[in-house]
View 1: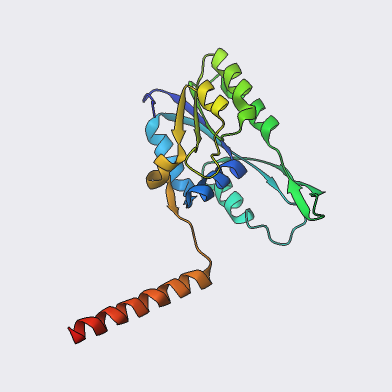
View 2: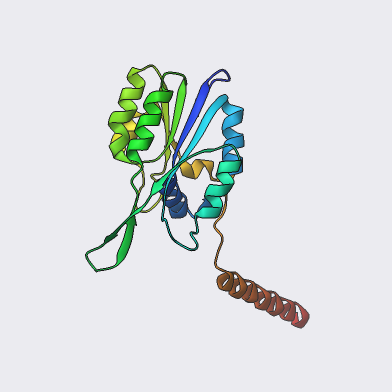
Length: 204
């Protein structure tokens, strides 16, 4: 990543897109490490995190993360997700944050030197070009190493820098948490394997 110590940085994290990219690579984002890493890279002005929330749900899996981010240095931008029914008749939720990201990036281009966009969505190509015309540099963080790739070719070509999320996994990632029953069955298998080995050693 090409950063200068005097760069005024702003981060724009498309929450759903970054989650999908990290999941495709098999790790979770450690948002404390992410913030620490970019604070080392320059003068961090703002770190925005965008996500849609399902209202009136007793428990939302994303709520604890959103609350933590809100208290730990991130600027939260949220809106209500809209419910719709897909072609199979299942209830789904939609919450597009593209407009909010675009407005904030255009505004921050006036005061930041370097904008970092955590999204591979090709719809942002025109936005990145507009920000560059205002004099700011743009780094895009996404991945082409997942199946399918998450980063649009058009967006990668438009950005000043492209960083593959896979290359940041050791810096800002932690292993994906497996469901408890998988962890238990795995540790059980490992225990049996160790028992087998010790029996083989005794026989030898």
